[in-house]
Length: 364
Image (cartoon, rainbow, N blue to C red; front, side, top):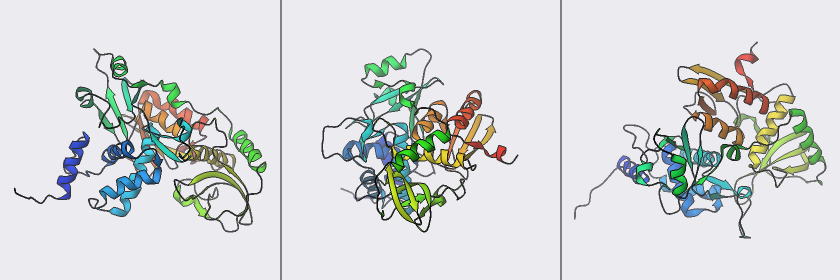
């Protein structure tokens, strides 16, 4: 028996082949596609579990192979968020569980499903337990990977939906998969949330709480988060917990002291995450105060790229993913490439439902 030493690149190349994803020649082998595939495999093993447990499981396994270990955890966390957006992972309010030990911030592996897109392709969603893919080899080889998404393009001679249903995948309508919250004006959303907040009992001082400062520039999301000092007002907030992701809410503060706290989402019927409710509320707050969040549109030959500088609620990002596809970011947080024929309609959606303003319009 001959023992041969192999380097990290060989390990990662074999890993990609094992996961059934394309090998990248001369590029970063631990890219979004690889991380998404690893998170799916980890979810099949670990879920239901907390988001942090899932991220730790993947990051620990890659720690000796990563060139930059500190940034690896951020990339893994981003991949987990990406799979929540797509629907490969579900939070507790999206599933039913009879287990009393399941915590409200745990995530679950979604069952194998699919969503037909208007552009003639199909999203593959969910995790197939012990199998790498819910698809047979001939279909798995046709999957294209767009960051965290898995897509199959239709052949004219096939009925792909029927084939997928016969394989046991659940068909999700685009409407059910997206289903945004009811349409409101910024004023209605802010005033309704404020009324619920002020109806809460005194919260007492909350340790380690962070607040999203509406006075800070909307173009730098991370820089808007700050700790309690001497602020007074109503703020979107998040606070840590012993196990699991931070809890989201809205808080009333007087001279740096927390007075009332409303957890988000405040309704058990709200099907999205707490962060989705919080980000949408912050968009309303910013719009109402005359400092709306903004986006950049870049028209190119293939269509229009929309760049965003703050997170989008999951239901909004799914809509962009169905119509277009995520693309390389340029000095922003999120970028999507949309077909030229759909760009104007989706831009109207961004303005009417998220109250965003185009950067070029802000200069006028």
